[in-house]
Image (tube, rainbow, N blue to C red; front, side, top):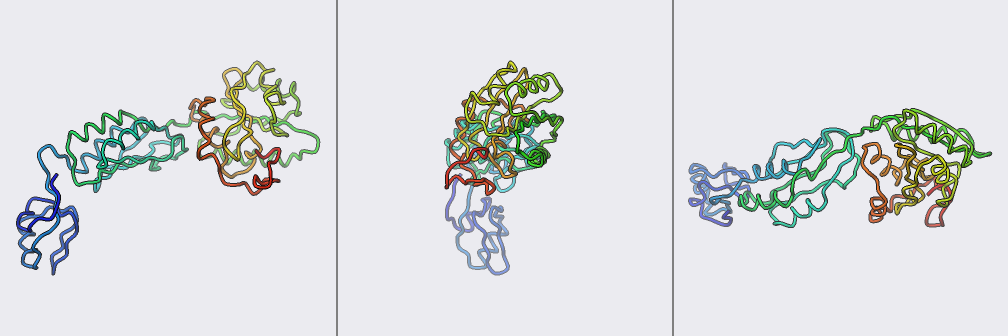
Length: 339
């Protein structure tokens, strides 16, 4: 594409790179300069304008954006019609956004003329939410460059994993002195968290904060209809040998990982009993404010695998807003039960 200052009479057939206003004549940015428009500009005293002219093999910004966006769009992604070199991508359903980070980075590294931006990977989204955008910077790019960009981007770099787990079983352990109202409020907060996902609390069980009692309940839930088990401990998990991880193993399950580099949310546990995933919720999960529990909960509800490596990669960006309800905020020291 040729771009630069040209005499008005030489701009015929090119695109006006910027809006031009002269007397009663207005030429909008990106519009085609016709012979009539050029004559009117000349009459108004305009000798030259900045214009863009396509060369053989060039592809216009809208078509290039459209092709690139369609290459990026995977399952449950809707591509919006392009305008001014931009094509937006939207979630076709509620779920968790999956992003091939290497593909997006590879595309953006090809040439400054092509850009793609997305929401953070694994972000929970609702149907219709914009999850990405493609922008072609100049008015046109060589077709060969577009093909290179599509090659680097691969295919289906953006996908939505829809929420598929609907039935959540909640097991709360209790100790003398723990008010039932605290457990009730915790369940209400969790129910609110689940609303956007279409999931709900199918079972509410309360057992003593003892390994054997909790193990029996976990075995029962593992053979039930629940698709995900969440355990709220009366006391925060302090060690892999504590009540909740010990109960998971006694029930024949497995502790996949304990602890996460997200604060609030450090004391989260991920495991399984039978075929059912189990989340040992950190104390901060009793708060409605975003914390590490949200990140893991949404992945499980969308049936997105959560590995030890996945959890340990959450540190950058894992320092979240302080939860005011913490008995002892992080700046004054850590508090049992709120991590």
